[in-house]
Image 1: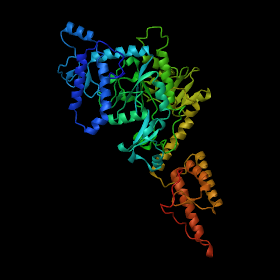
Image 2 (image 1 turned 180 degrees about the vertical axis):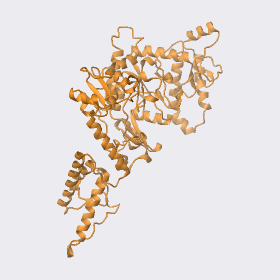
Image 3 (image 1 turned 45 degrees about the vertical axis):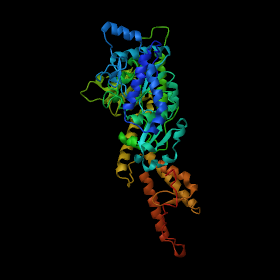
Length: 560
């Protein structure tokens, strides 16, 4: 909850003198900053005035009786906070102490006692409203951004599919030319924020800079109804390269965090829900050294009803419902972290798991992160097999325990089954994580890596099924070319090959079923054969080699 605009405590006994002092102090702080132009001052006047009023609204909630009591008992003001180097209660000049809340006001600091007081009062107020706190990461969690110069040629089509910045509520892909960036909002994000706001007071907390954080907040919350001024950037944190709840005005026992990076929150892992990363742009995949294609390259996206945000929303609803269960009881001592653990323990409840050659030989299995993860998800872990075992997690079907599981008709899965359950908060179909599936994935990844370093070669060791599908699609496309040879070619493929629009469908199948290096190779071979055939034609029928199209003559098809 924002100390500036959302404090629930509204004292009618605040002094006019205090208000006048704070107003003057805010004005002087504003004047002391680097002087803007008259036009800028005029444009920002309303926003600045509103900000000051919100600051004063909160600061006037400092109860005079509390101040007088503190003064009489200790003989001096306790200096609950400051603007610049002046206490905002007594006006005394202070050394720089306390925690900085720059996202509320660039010169505002609060001491620990005042932070605790605000957190206590806000928590009591919110719990009466049946609300908790939710801290949300931006990049790879709610959205994905890329610098324009990092767009691959295969992503250039996105520039013609962006939405207007004049009405961001109706779009999801935005070109921010003034920042030389493009941003894609994650599917379901608008519904997620709307429903989550009914259960939580929400903060944004990003490792991006302040300008980026505020611009992304405008895309997600153009009316300012979800976050207000609760937008925290790396410039506002107290620890470099880490995130912490010390600048969030909510009790830790009432805060949940949604982020794609667990290591960003070293001191608050019990509050954290780790979400699957959203890799829409190719640069995002490269950033994390992923070899697979991004969603933009595949011209695809996450499912709204079954995507990561929809899954997390269900988890948030469960934790919220557990926290406010039996509201007639005293809930002041309840801890949402315990509720989150309860929800997690339901994911693999009833499963008994044995690991086979997954951990290093000399390591204690129970100390391994995968073992701990399975237990947190509600599974029972063991080192030896027996009749009660339901799953064997292995990396090789030839191990003794894996063979036992096959004989006893138990599930044999690779470790990805547990990882997926952890991210998706749901037990996954075992057949999708069989060791056979793992081998196919490893083979495919190895081939992709080799193909990327040898783009002009055709690889014979590709999986039989994939190869056959590629060959079938290839033959269908070239058969269409022969059948429609009398039609005017208007589409461009690779290596100068032209084809009529009647073959667009078969071309799309060809491109989707074969690696790009294969497609280029087959197109080259087809053109070469055609040239040879034409050169061998008799007499007047000889037409010579196929001519290459001029670059300005044809427009590439979106499918190529």
